[in-house]
Length: 287
Image 1 (cartoon, rainbow, N blue to C red):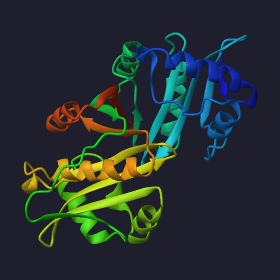
Image 2: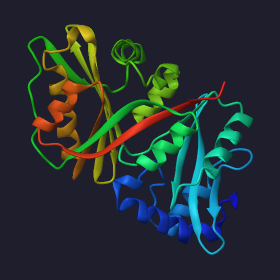
Image 3: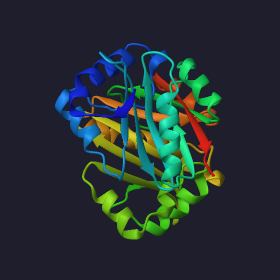
């Protein structure tokens, strides 16, 4: 039976999550919390009209979990996380996404999660790209920028320069282009977020965004405009962001690269980053 998530389900959803953590072949985008009270807030605190999270109830045990999250004019699946193959939760999510007028439904299984990937493809989802997640502990990654290039901490952010670089170097994830000036300024004013911009003379040619979360840090985005690539600018920006992260106490720095970013993947491997996770992005067109 498929039903909305209830507070009483939290212990069994936690069991599901811990079971998922044990093996990449079970992994999918799922709640981050691994404590009952925090998990309850993370799931039941989600807003939106109608149901946003469901479980597959096997009578004496929760067999699966799935939630829907709005993402601009798209929606993203959290799960489905299943003890055994069952497409009931997925069908319910697709129906709800259509009811809400969603244009595209996204899913994010681990590359090794073949049963779920097969279920998604049978439902009409198509793979879009693969993302590789790497990490490294405190390491000196400093690298000098090429002659004529300076890299500065953008305080405050220059929205015009930011959009100029982002528009030229981004070929997929372009959410930030829709942000107003005040939204960009507020985001980068957060003390846990740092933005570095590279300039060749007066021309902005690269950006790197760093996000801190307690003792971990993540490079949320790094990019160099096409005509400035191959000069070591990206390598220098990475080194500066890493220095900033480790200076502020990060014990782990995470980065990511899509499947077409071969040079970035090779760079991370050569610098000693460890491959942590490989995620395939799937999309279902609902129009």
